[in-house]
Image 1 (cartoon, rainbow, N blue to C red):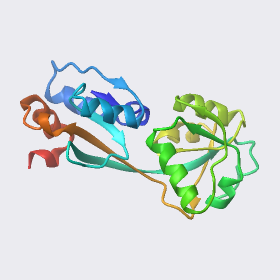
Image 2: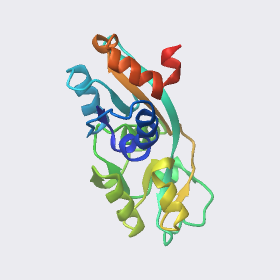
Image 3: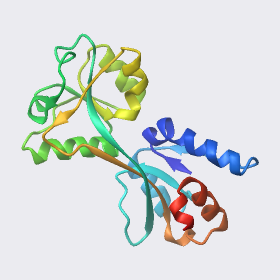
Image 4: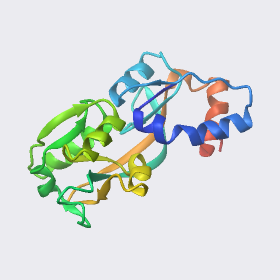
Length: 201
């Protein structure tokens, strides 16, 4: 199985708990990659199942949505925005942004929203690690835009502040995906029936 960092770090555990309850002897090998690489691995039949954001069904892949999350701007408690209730895309475009690497679904969503509003993103740092991004933001090194699920504990602990972004679509759509050639796999069908109940209906 291949999963993006957001899926592996903040969603996989709940699905794994359900799988272990139903199949106590099940073993799972998970590799973590950005969205583009997860998709490529599925297309190459290197993995049976993927968890990723921004997946779209096409001739080769079947997609089973499991969640939607809203991406929010995150800042240090010391940032001038820390006491705001929201921020606009225009204001976001003026800030130094800390972004995920190219080909991650989160980055694509942020850049698309900004460019749709006529704003060119201004990145001061790129990182492949979501945790590293949060640390950089906490140190007041810039502003990031991450899925709300990713920052829930940081918000509760007072380490970061989150602001809704007005003026654009920053919805992260998360899904399981698999190759059509694997659709008849008894094991895959059994797994999907547990983690995506609609699959078995």
